[in-house]
Length: 252
Length: 252
Image (cartoon, rainbow over all chains, first blue to last red; front, side, top):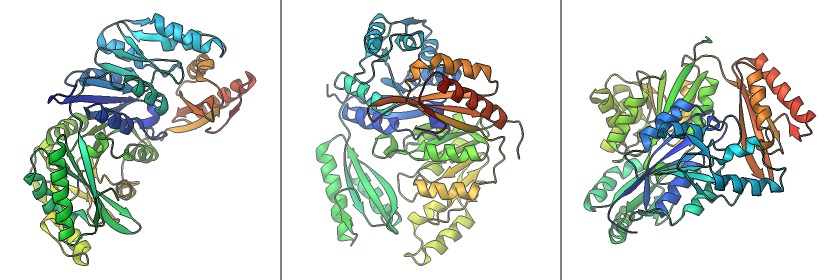
């Protein structure tokens, strides 16, 4: 469904392990990249601890004003997995055991020691929810309205994204071209701004780096319109080369 | 300054490149881990694009209610670096060129092509700010009240954290012990909850993983009190072993 409407999403990452620095989050980048392919723009991400009130507050702040709210983390079987309860509280609905989730878990654990109360925790959903398939480890993700509740373990979250791929209404994809060069961004700042101004509907981001003792930057040109994107990228590339900068039409 | 008061911080990551999925954020984990050593708890992180209103809104939401607000990103010389302007707007103060920052940049660029208007952008601060040293690339970080404005490039941000190390009032450090095992967390969920309940002032987090085709979990015991931490970790470790689980007193 390609329309001119811009579809936006927010992501809520739930987990003490991210805020303690123990675990480096991988879900923001993965969800962001995947959403881009769906024609949906991630416009805000938040990280909150495994604590009810901050989750409730963030869910209620983020579920309005965006087409989608995705969450990762806190849907396992242990006492610190409180995402479902907190989201139900945010929505003002009770928590119930979803019959399909129960069946999925009973099947999954049939050869793995059988279902238990702890494992049944993973069948609990905010009332009115549907399930997101998890081919990896049984316990499904959960959809309630525009909220998509996914696992925190990155490759399980990835499985859930794959199950959702192609099912979410989105708009035009943001396309990008990267021009990389061994050039200090401060030398070409005016050029970047002027090039962006000269090409309507295109944005240029500048991302400096330091590698092998040298200073450089990647200039990322973004647009939903391929012709505008290519025209701007070509303009920037040729101008940088004409000024004697060592650049390549790809990321350095 | 070790007191019983809990010091909290929020982190605002500013950058389109994170929300597009182009760049995986590394600053949340780095800032979180560094803050932990300073006795300061990171209790919320947000990621916003290089767009003025979302930055202003997030700064005003996060600078109150926490002892510290750190930001990363958007303080370079290019047109998409708008962090200083947005934070000044949030604070309701004008932007001015900081004389020390100007001198630092003039010195730094003396042998690198000289100062330019674009480079002078990096001397602009919200009125009333002081500087955070950057031994890496000249352009300093900025402090204004309880807001600490740092670079987005991870190892420049790291340099700024090092410059701040030991200067920020903090409380007791949160200590942790990790017990790892090839055990599905759903098998020990009740045990984890009971162990946490039995040890006041201690929290247990459970982080599942899938490696080498096997299911396991790391159980992270956290407390500001070393004796309580050790007692709880020993209790959990011995109980897991007594139940026949294959565990080690470290991360798997």
